[in-house]
Image (cartoon, rainbow, N blue to C red; front, side, top):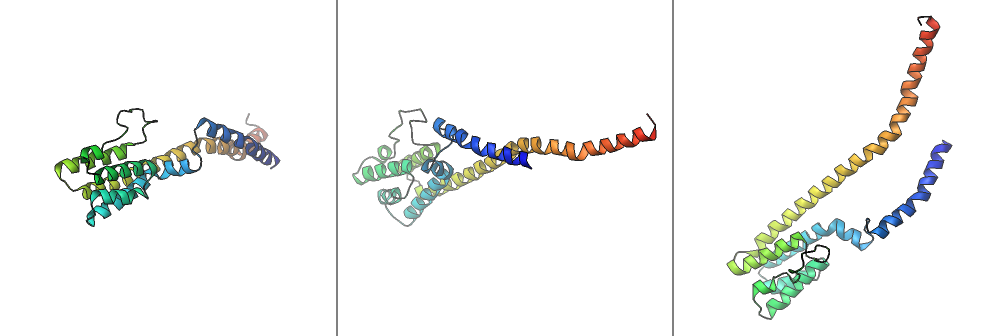
Amino acid sequence: MTWAALFLAAALVALPATSAARVRRGLVPVGDAARQVDGDALTVAASLDLLAACLTSGMAVSTAAGAVAASAPPAMAALLSRAADLLALGADPARAWANPDAGERNSTQNPVGGHLESFLRMARRSASSGSALAHGVEELAVQLRADAVDAAGARAERAAVLMAGPLGLCYLPAFLCLGIVPVVAGLAGDVLQSGVL
């Protein structure tokens, strides 16, 4: 029992230094960044649903984009407010829905993710062909939610696999010491006392 308490105390002393080192290296998101990483797809999906509701109710695209920009995630809000402003000024819709960072291919510098790029392509296609933007935006939101569910399931499965190793290392020696060794020792004692060997 005292060994377990000592190991627990050593783990509590060692873990904060390890966690701080992981945070410094950028391996663990902190604060708002952690919430943004976990809920980014779901937040974008909610913003897309709100945009689809605004468009379905009959709002102009520029008005709907400006209204949704207030509650959208930062990257999406910047794109929506830029497009709303350009559309209100009478700019070409293809130019208004263009990605301002299209020249940058590095994903660390380009804040527009794959889902936002899909939305921008859909908005440009809708402006040029006249197809309904609201229906496509709803489908994109459903797809984002499905991707978020799949990603959460994959993270849960990965956590289960990663937990199996340490649990096996803890329980296997205990099983051997408390289950197998006493049985073998008892049988060996009986065999040696019987005189068979």
